[in-house]
Length: 541
Image 1 (cartoon, rainbow, N blue to C red):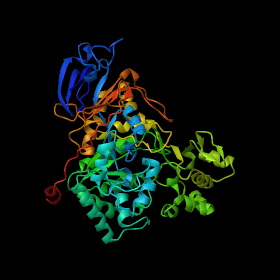
Image 2: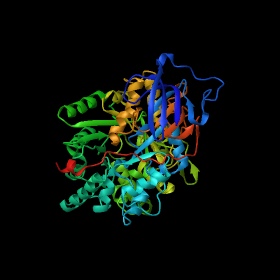
Image 3: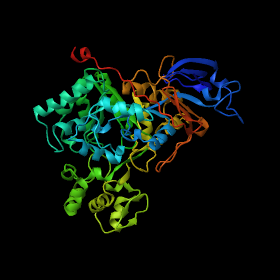
Image 4: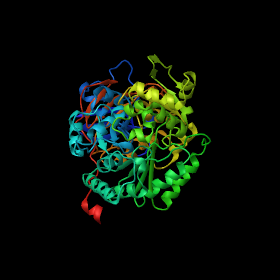
């Protein structure tokens, strides 16, 4: 038995906090006993070991006086598909308070995958998600079994439209045939039957950007029929954002649309979030369920190689392809710009950790400034930097508006997703700082919701997106996933730079203490996220 005593408990439902003791037996919450009003909670102990109180077994007691006791954070947009198996990277996620990762995002995840497709999928995942094993996970069950043995957090995975498409259509960027669409739907039907909690897409990425509305709608249908979401990275976040939203609504017609990492960015869009919130409300009025997630930063982060021309990305080794014909690729990039994945041109790109011709480029150098200083066009600079880095160079992209980021929190379907890249040394704080920054904003009144409501968006409401009704709420009989943090240590963290927060003092996953008094215990939870089963009668009437 484990007792968490004297903390200020936010239960994940949006209810106001209470001062309470939480009792855990095995992997379940056995009881929550109110001990006083939150205003009457005892202060943090001074000069006393915070891991134990007088008369208690310190190994079985966490003294939470002065601390917030919350359900474990559920990241509804995680790229920890592979890095969740890395203890060092898991340590960073524990410092962020994250206990559950929803992976398989942006239409490109590692499972399930056949041997013939694995080299391509593993190569695409390497920079974002981490180093892939030599052999593929041929089923979701095989992947989750390995996560149960080795992962430092709970894991649930979406079905990934792009990965399904690569098995049926291949790398070629073209419209799918009717038979291929049926083949993709058949694969989705199997995954929905296996309990996979939704379908993700990344329609601005090659080769999935060739997919029609009809194709993606068909692939999504098995999930719509069991009430699970279509989780989409939109086709366009720039000039055609409005059209991309309308397309997403058509794809999800009759089901549930989840707009992941939603942002309203680009020149002239400051202060316009209310218009998009009104659009979401209109979709709900006509019967479409809509939820969203976002992260609390204005700068995006991705890999420069993802902006290479389609013709190069369709080859087995895009970097080698670009290196063999730099002038042609550079010309294409100068003509087309970065494309619809971002809402700005090359002028919004900032280089961090870049090297060229054996010399380091100063961090935060604008790409266009670097290009001009070295006698290159932006396209030539992109090509040379991608080739020099072997495709592994990350860039920050200044495109957002702080007022829009905060305004989106007002949506009643808002949840939190970090979109954090853990697979390499990426200089963006969102993987570790997203949840704590949002809490800090709520605590200081910088967003239109209070702390209790914000906690619910990260926990109870997020559990609905993941499809795990056992998670996200501190209540008797529920899974014992608990984040304990010191509100005095809450810090918004940097806007840009690597960041390891220290507010999370203790973390419990499935009743296992994986972080104690700010330090890793080295214990693994041995847990995966148990999602709603998909029943045949639900899918077919």
